[in-house]
Image 1: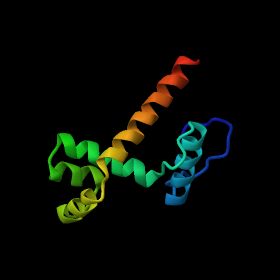
Image 2: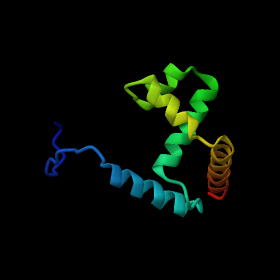
Image 3: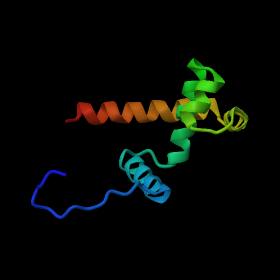
Length: 99
């Protein structure tokens, strides 16, 4: 480990709660209330499913079984996922343009 003059701190993985809180915080900051880590995961799964196979989606989501992925994708609302994706992209573009 490189010496930086700071005390070494063991890195720990982020908890589910921490991830959810971070997503909510930055979604709110970007005026995208209602977005959660779960909704982002569903949106990503939907986009992967449009271009790839169910096996690729299953691997992407780290599911142990393709059956789980099939059930998961049945609950994805494509219109809502597309709307959220477009809102996020537009807000990111506006934020970049304003800097």
